[in-house]
Length: 444
Image (cartoon, rainbow, N blue to C red; front, side, top):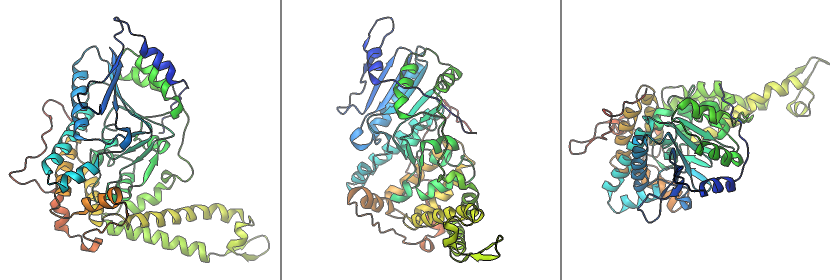
């Protein structure tokens, strides 16, 4: 069921006027609690609510260790404060969050600073677990780019507001990695096999598509967000249903466009429901081949005058029945061709690792997924099995030649042992991710 949210317009000046009126009774304030010189997480709010603002706009608010630690600190203090009813999160500039700062990770690895990389993953994953078990309502405003870790610091929370500017993706296979930051948990719980499709292809979804498949809980045009923010910051409540009702007041009718992947779920499920990556590709190949043959050779009998007509006649509108039936085949063919092209561009090892991760995540709790992803991430950055992560970041983010040399270079060279290594327990000297599961029970 698609949830429809109506939003109304306002301007930032209204919020500025509201926040600018400071009284001791209302305790209105806007300040930075971070001691970090770059002020990477800002805080806004009143005595009864807080907004965490991811503030690295030059890099689309990419997450680093400092931001993860600050978010842990703030969210813990807000949860413990009885005067704070709920919290919000948003991004500075044109993005919510583009994910983890993979360029910094790349530089750390080149300098041999593996411990810094481990600290990054441990800190970020711990915050994601905190968010997924948070005792107060959390509203994430997903305006703009929301990718990778950006989904991780928002989707496990209570409410996610997508907009007409939202672009969501888990693009990790493009850089020789795997969907992490809780992605194996929330992707695996999407309808059908959308999770496998998104994880393997790194394809994007719009805000409307996020709402339709359940990644977002609400939708509003981006121009109307100031009105929503103004309404929420004046809300005095810690009741989840009150926050929900407040968001519902800003309903905007929206549905995925005609070209959305959500309109071809039957084909998607048929192809991505197979057990192996090889079988998925074979299925896509079959649909693609059949579509090409159908579009090239099909001749229809015109019942009106007893003549066969060709495709060129059909395209001129001489056979409406054919045009309608053929459109689905034509779009499926184009989608399969595009999907195959992407699957042949990304890391073969990442494809197999990511597919298994999503399949395992379907039967695990959030903490179990995060603990497993931590092991997988450490395997990915250490290069014990492959250097695909370093090569992927180099090709896409550093040198930008977009020509990664994957190792192994093809699916048939990816052994079962290579994949198994990503899911094996860490060595005796390497501690597993320790999440506060005794203090915070994981939701199923």
